[in-house]
Image 1 (cartoon, rainbow, N blue to C red):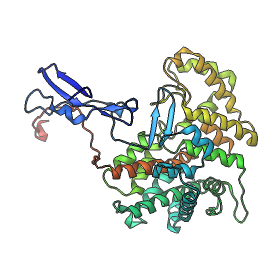
Image 2: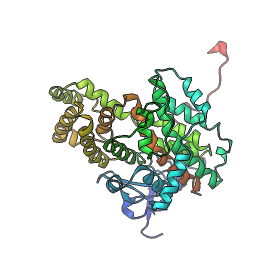
Image 3: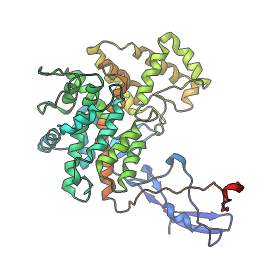
Image 4: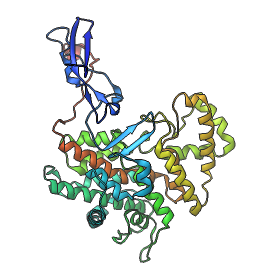
Amino acid sequence: MGKDSLTITDNRTGQTIEVPIEYGTYPKYGAAIPAAALRDLKVDDEDFGMMTYDPGYGNTASCKSSVTFIDGERGILRYRGYPIEQLAEHCDYLEVAYLLLNGELPTQSSLDIWGASIREHQMLHESVKTYLDGFNYDSHTMGMLVGALGALSTFYPDARDIADEEAVELHTCRLIGKVATIAAFGYRHSRGLPYIYPDADLSYTANMMQMLFGSPGKPYKPNPTLERALEVLFILHADHEQNCSASTMRGIGSGHADPYSAMAGAAAALYGPLHGGANEAVLKMLTRIGSVDNVPGYIEQVKKKEVLLQGFGHRVYKSYDPRATIIKKTAYEVFEITGKNPLIDIALELERIALEDDYFVSRNLYPNVDFYSGIIYQAMGLPVDMYPVLFAIPRTSGWLAQWRELLSDSEQRIARPRQVYMGEDERDVALRENR
């Protein structure tokens, strides 16, 4: 088979198999062996065969993808080959969404058509408003978003026709357009404020801001610095490879569910505090610390495992999260307009001490994207329960890019992981009176 293979010897039986190695775009971008080949390793004919045991899929590739590349050791994040730093500096969110979904950055004419398609689908059916009105005033806005996304599948009967490319494109535009409106309406409902309808003359992020902060009957013009900050945050959150919510989107999509139902599941996965709710946890931590003077004591509590250091460390990044660098710079630009958020001093002191302490450095605990994003959202006047929602809005384009790639991949089948069974062997049922 040559050098591009792996020779495996089963020491239980002495059996040897040779397994081909499959490479990514370049060898350094990942190599893998087909897991099914291990099934040939058996003790006897009744043996199921060898499997790999990998809780949380820490070293298991579930798909081949061209959407996003991450090198956690070197702190690299690229969408379709473009460095995240360049995209954040030179592009707006809809350009990046187009890139994720189509593989290339749009020309101006393509962007105009794309933007018009999104704006066309920002309005919600009036029944969706009625649905949102049914939530209690104190309902978490992320829970409202999850519910509304699932409900949308009932409004579009053709959503299940996932083999129709034109229908898929239509539902893609609908979801990207409507998710921002649902999020804003959820926010307004939870505050007892009247809904502000989308304005097709505004950019995607400016429209989001006017639906959040505008007043009925009054024109709204967002501050350009704040609008750009939201644009950057949306770009940074647009996709992040095979994370918990993206793999959920693919898993549900593998059963050929409609995109609205699949996205409701992805949003539910994002809802968790270990995923999209992490920046909410960071803000609560900083508020609990209270002042810079209390930081050293909190660090000692972390090292004694009495409390958690939120916003540090990442499942993939073993160096500084490249998104955190961009967000930190954006935070200061926002503070020039809103005034300095006092929590930033606590965050900076936490970062300074942690990056100088071998306890954290040796464990690769560096600030991640969640560490500064919540501080920016708070400075912009957004409540904590909106933070995971503001994560879900831009991640819509990434989820849909992953879902569409799944549908076009001939190697994909319905997701069905194996297990290592640890329960009882066969046994007989005793009659109830004899148990």
